[in-house]
Length: 106
Image 1 (cartoon, rainbow, N blue to C red):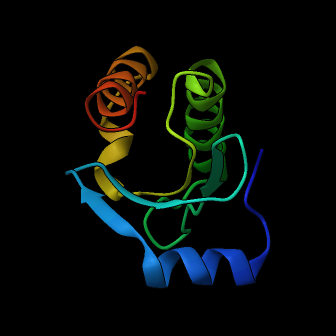
Image 2: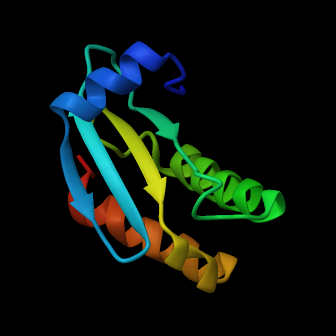
């Protein structure tokens, strides 16, 4: 499931805990649902080209889809940083898997 309403995003940003890396910022907060949800905020300010923004969103969504049944029931907001562009798809998938495993697996 996705987080798309601005009220939900504002609530998560105000009350969430944060994990920062050199390539992404994760905000996470417990939710009342029986499943984890994801929200992506990819800013044009940091990732200029639309095909790069779409690639990043597609990779993160696919990685979340593959791991969602192993994750804690949280709401996740993900802000990719500019440094994410230097990683190829396979390296980015590995980094995301490591991040999920280290912090959010059941």
